[in-house]
Image (cartoon, rainbow, N blue to C red; front, side):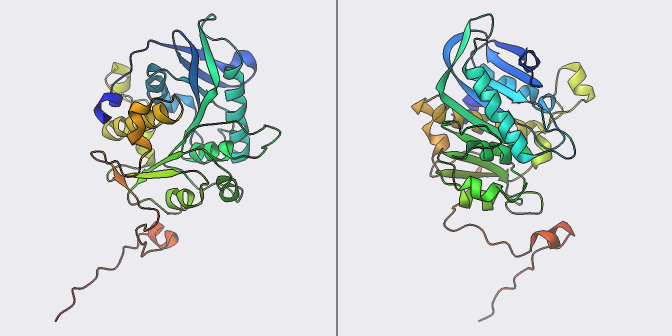
Length: 292
């Protein structure tokens, strides 16, 4: 099942510019379809949709209308501002026709996803409270990829999330100075699956310009990590947002997938080194075997 959603989906993909409605960003959508599911995707700090083009294209190939607002991409980006942008973007695509009238969105099948700073903004956007004048959307799934700490409003907002969630993080980056996957998973109000990758980090998901990207053979991201994360994210959203029960396993913490771990939130791993010490290079103490 994982290998299936690693590959491109069956739909041809169109791309459009959100600028025509006064919002910087892009829309990726199947070339036709009525009542399609939609996902708003939040970018990492100082990034924009260009760092996720293949990921967004992949989701659209599986039948999603994917909207990626580019606002709040500067140094002083606001998590609440980006969350409000995500909500506004979902509102736009839910109430207009796309692709010369051939594509529409089902407003009852909408979800949120994001990476790093944008993952936490997606959680904020999913909270059942108003944010900067934007009402809470009735989302049915939230995928947070390598979430990063933002501001003090994140934790209480996460408690107000009712939709099921997927959180993906590095196995060694569950709770660090720049990663908050475990604390976030513990406080989210909806059912959450926390999956881990043993190799790779948040930076590996970012697409970038390389010689390979110019030749069309690579997107500049960590190839294995990108394939794994886009697959588990796609499968989760197909179940929770698109409503396809065939992919229910992606939202089930008891289900296991090759190269992906799962964290038991009732008995999470114990961190022996605090985040600041780890940032400075400290390592956990090796425990000596007891002699009898």
